[in-house]
View (cartoon, rainbow, N blue to C red):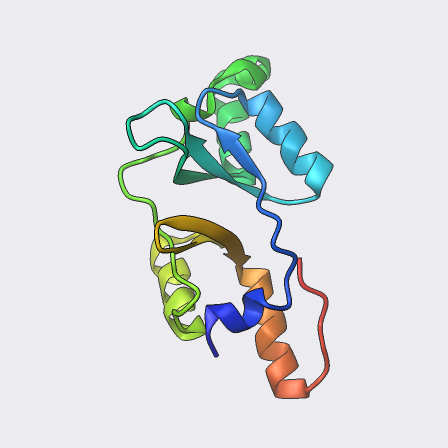
Length: 142
């Protein structure tokens, strides 16, 4: 099974946050969209409007633990590591994506095809697809 097989059954909406936004804004975006991760885009660097990282619920918790109530004012850029974005392509196998997620201890991967952000795939998407393949009945995916 390929990542693209899962994406065909999924809403193509990708919610993003900019590096210069605050944790408060990011948390509101996650809540409003009922999601637990955002793709971080860097619109200031020479690469332009580029996906550079992921901002997750774990990052919100870390911000609160480190900054207390002031966490809502901390910039996303202070919490996101942009050293190397872990991503996949729609042509990658689900097994490869599961390996990446396990190796890097992450639950969400941006899907990038030809340098363009296409979607985000989550561990829940993978589990639902595997369940469907094994049981033959569609499962709800987030």
